[in-house]
Length: 165
Image 1 (spheres, one colour):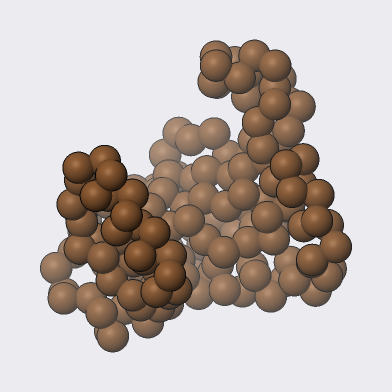
Image 2: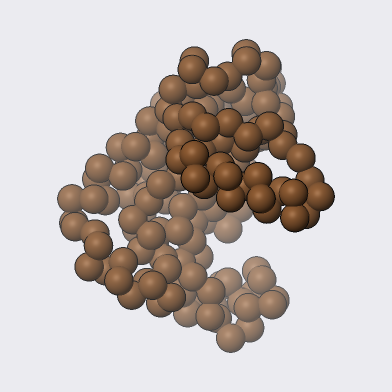
């Protein structure tokens, strides 16, 4: 397993959490958008892309997010997300999967992002996955029985599988 983050301090927190849990991973400080700088060329079975986003889904717990973002951030972050998807997709082996997620409720960072990606990558299949989970939506309660009070954050999940021809 490889854990990658562009921020060295977050990589140290990853290392601390892995030690606490008795788990191991290769921890790499690097830019996921520039795999040539850190990737060893061996394709991955699976990649979790927890993409940078507006964090609009966590406003309930962090109301300051509302004042830390500008409307232009959505487009800027959607561009970064598209770049990361494009850069990481070649690292997934045929038959492998990439789980794309954001803590955003905006379609530009979720459904629209993935639909655009699928239109340009015919070898990618969208597998059954929750899509947008919106705070207070009844759908989440049925998907996640431990969330009966519907107190979850907004989130987006898309599971992509690379066709093996």
